[in-house]
Image 1 (spheres, rainbow, N blue to C red):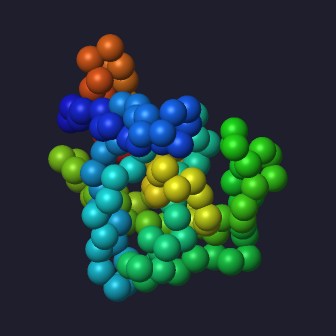
Image 2 (tube, rainbow, N blue to C red; image 1 turned 30 degrees about the horizontal axis):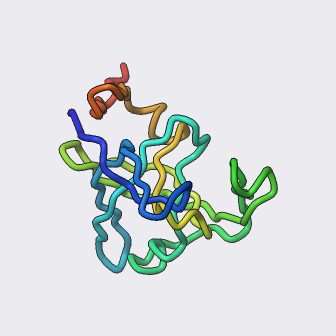
Image 3 (cartoon, helix red, strand yellow; image 1 turned 45 degrees about the vertical axis):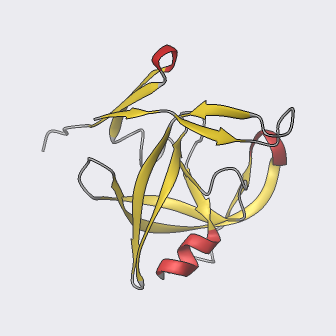
Length: 143
């Protein structure tokens, strides 16, 4: 499935500056219902991460015993704790699937990030930046 890059307003640089980023509409499901939002498709993210408010709003139970400390470029290597859960996700135009997601206090620019473990290892992603489009194709695994 092919998707368009989306304009994202950031606090980097001048006021009102925006960048075109590979974001895709997703639906996250939990015991209290569903929530539709946009997720950044980020090949540089090791895992999938999301804001803890999403887990609270749809009723996703988190494993508080095994936090991962999410760092990155801004927070460094010892950032905020994020708690894992297996989450049902539906990417617009694709079939529903379950992936591990770490929920914590993350960037205000992106509330959900689709990373390597759980997403890129089960989907082929092709970025075509000069056209501001990207493609996501589920991997067909042999049984």
